[in-house]
Length: 202
Image (cartoon, rainbow, N blue to C red):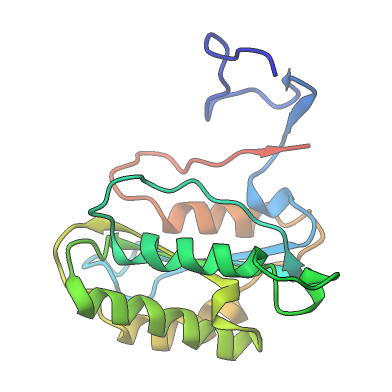
């Protein structure tokens, strides 16, 4: 692989740019076939006008990878998602994606990082994965959970309980043409950002 230290792609990488055989295309997650996205207001933030719950669902179990902090003091969603991701690929089956492996969804809230929240934060994260898994009829370990925002505040489960069904109902198309739903998901994870950050490559 070439050293990209001087030309590492940024959020402003123009559509059509090719780096190491990877072409940047228009849109973010909404441009990816097989994914459907949503971004809604669930009530994690004080501002009722801001989206704060993003949901990305695969049309079928998908191979996934993750980059996680190496800090031993990591938030509950990091611990749970790291474990779920390792379980989603740790199978002896000849067809792991058909036998309970792979990832089905990523759910992300903003406004509360669920960090430094102890056992209560862990319980909320586990419950969130279980709730979404029930709605998608999959295994909890096929759900990845992430949170961003204020550190040290308890993350309530109630916005997930009411928000997950609405986010599922708001999911866009999975044919790669629904750029608006991908943008909504990107907007839902903004904290101090002034613009949504997203990119898609082929």
